[in-house]
Image (cartoon, rainbow, N blue to C red; front, top):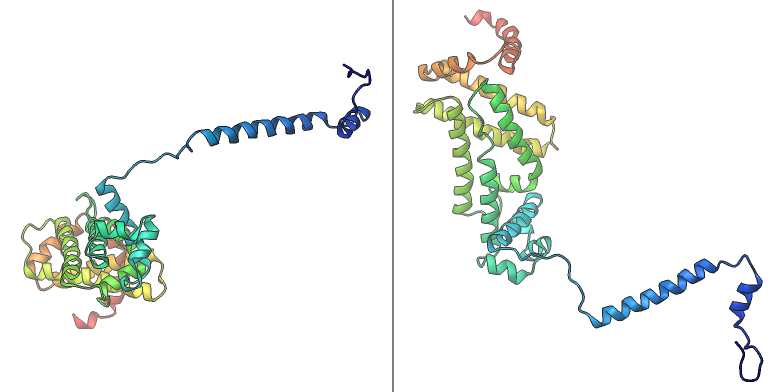
Length: 287
């Protein structure tokens, strides 16, 4: 095509170079131009329609409350209650401080008690096991769950049981004691004792207290010995404590005989008996 004067219009310099050099990358240039056109169209379209929001589902009241409790429990697990603020909880839950107050108008104390209640619900189930098979196996599984909780919630567990937190109240103490009673009741169910005598009940509660104390010392000792060794030692402690009680309480003796009848030589009770025999043999002069 020519102009009115009959002279062809001058080409732009870039176009001239592209024609003169067969090696010029024409395809990328075209792609760039196409991309620019597409980008322009996209931008124009974005300007004329509302931005599309990501998938969002409004949480129910119970779901939001559970989310806040979970965030608080995670924080209380690694820091003492007095070192956790409502702002910390709000940030961890991706919420605002007013929203936290909306669900927990009592502030941090109410939230702490709710988180403690949630932890207690989990701990109370630790020793819930099918009542079949050797007692030592059931105790091992229960202790595995209990010590896993201690491991995960180390700072919070210490603050809870050492009663040194400013968040401690009669309600928090009642929740902790409820966990202890629930654990003792589960153990008595495993022993198949409908109405335990005072010595057996006292022995079981004493063992629960020993488990708590050992767990706290385990945390202080930087989680040494290894958790499996701690678990097995606590199971041995239960058997030994029960044997000592059975020596002076006929009702406990009957329960112990029934429990030992389910144990095997290869199991933990058998291993404990083999380790004890040499030690007791050296004390034969007491017989």
